[in-house]
Image (cartoon, rainbow over all chains, first blue to last red; front, side):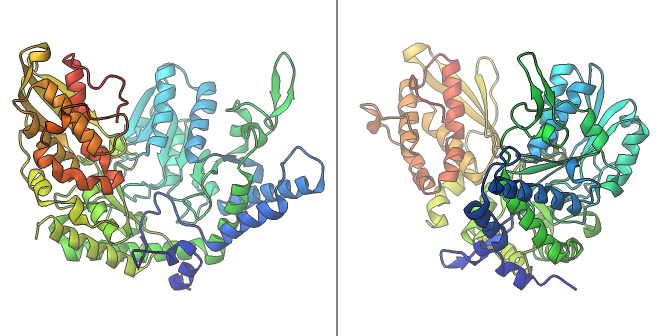
Length: 411
Length: 162
């Protein structure tokens, strides 16, 4: 069964909004996704009927709220095929999840001269936390390079990984769309005794995810890119690794006991969830997961493969040499993230013209400045697709780009 | 929504396609300052050569390098035309006038500023209708302000960086 996009679109109230009398063409889901009605409703209903503190009060309402929060955790675990719900930690966002890894695991395990291996296509969220600990501890960062078509170049992987303590990599590039060989990289990391960390922010919303099949140790991803609310992110980790890690933030909920002399930590996941968590957001996330599950992640992926192929072909047919699309052409190894350079126009100007057509794209460095340097540009324009996009949206992008040609007198 | 013709005026596109005073100057004697917008990655380098010292100084030469969008590049190009050969005091007035036109807080025109003609820079007035792009228009000017500060010409004491 293929995805019925027309029906899917009806679930997203914002897609019915018009600006200047025309509908919104939302092609920025790689940035953040729109929210279906049932996510919005779930959060409202929970707030109206069941809102109460979790894990610390004994009245029934508080029990109800605690149950809702823990059910969200269980839903996340099922969604990524994690073996245990208590291996799922809720954070503020995926960036915090990656900082948690670098700070909590890194501080306990990394010292002067240790090696952390990253790739040249990482988001700043999987670079800066390692830079921070590297500056503090004197750690060496190594970078897996890219092939000309935007895949990871694994030719020298053995040499790069020699002596490494961590391999941290994206499952899917937020700029190139490239889907990396996740299981292969996890195996390679383990072969040298390194921790395998996966930034799965772009991958999880668009693909069937199986963290056990990957063999990963720690996986970071976010709610707001998968139809859930902003303000909540996830970290999944293998139980024994999480157990051995020191806490990240200190405060309420994360303790076993506190005295004038010190404290002991609660077991996971509470150990990493200091303070009142984003519980309304957890309820919204749960609704988003149910929504995606009902549609089927395999169907969503198939839809995006078809739409990405359509978009790559449409852009190439209309603009030929006037457009440079970054990342692999093979849609089996890429997601619906399409970054491009259009003629000599700056991405700001391209997005400004597209905005006139209500086409929402991102222009800039996409929080991947080192990758921009590899590509030899300061910025790109990026259109990113999701389950609610259809060929009309892609056609609107093409028409909008055509009008940029006219405005800047390039035809 | 205001039309794109308010933003992309012909004079702006002309400066974008054919930027004036592009290049580098030898440092020293010229001052070099780098400006960039961390949100979008735009970069502008200003090379400023002053003739004379203190209140007597004039802009002997100025060059712009870097990459950016049509608004940041054209604004910088127009800026070089407007300041070349001008006394530094007038350049400071022009800077205040331009920032005021862009609606940037902390910049109030001083007596006499209104005498300073904006020339081609008037064309950038339409940028105000596109608030996201104001930072593009002022990038070159902020970088110039840094250069003047390096030259010990303080730019509107107490004004916030914009």
